[in-house]
Image (cartoon, rainbow, N blue to C red; front, side):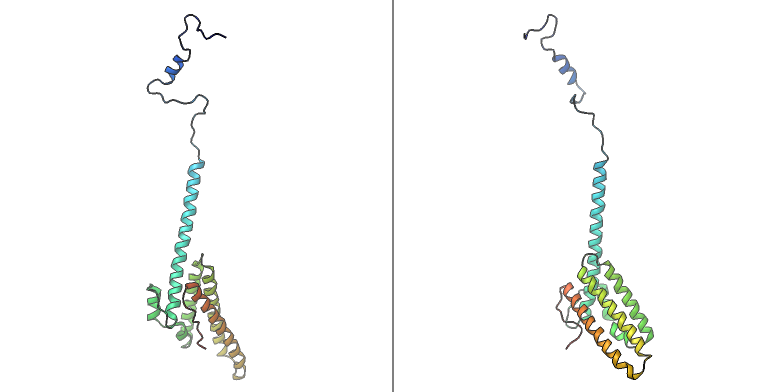
Amino acid sequence: MTTEQPPGAPPNPYEELTNAYYAPGRVPQAMWAPPPTRSWKGPVAVTALAVVMLGFGAAFGVNEFAKHQVCGAVAASTPGQTATGTPAVAANRTTTTAAGTASTGSASAEQLQDEIDATRQHAALLVIDGDLRDAVNGLTDDAENALKLGEEIKTISASQRTEYAKRLVGIARDMDGHWRAAQRACGQAETGLLQL
């Protein structure tokens, strides 16, 4: 094998190719690489990630809002607890309590039902704090049961009221347990509703 160039050939056969390849104004490109193409996968992946992150952020924000409202209301309704300064807590201090409205009549029973429905809506917003959501749902169920029992007691005889009193004590115990669970989920001292 010889390394000599044939007569009339340039000293380096690749010199012309190299000079042509690196000519001014031309971007060097490897001969074996395919031409660059734009992939749709990158922008779609970034968009999907952004949507997921926004979803998590929205869920966290909604959960924190509902937790702040519920825990503030629990603290404001518990004797000896200091409440955070939310609008719901301020409104709770200026309006009548659920216990006070339950004992005053049928118009108050409607107000109590509205309050129960609003509390259920806050519980539905607790997408991250499952313990607090369960406690609030339990409290609203107990409040509805007590409201129904109060309506039933109005129509029964005096001899049947002892049976209803036992049911009322059971509802009160359940409500106290759910109240303690809500206080625990809010990081408050567990005092409950029943002071025994």
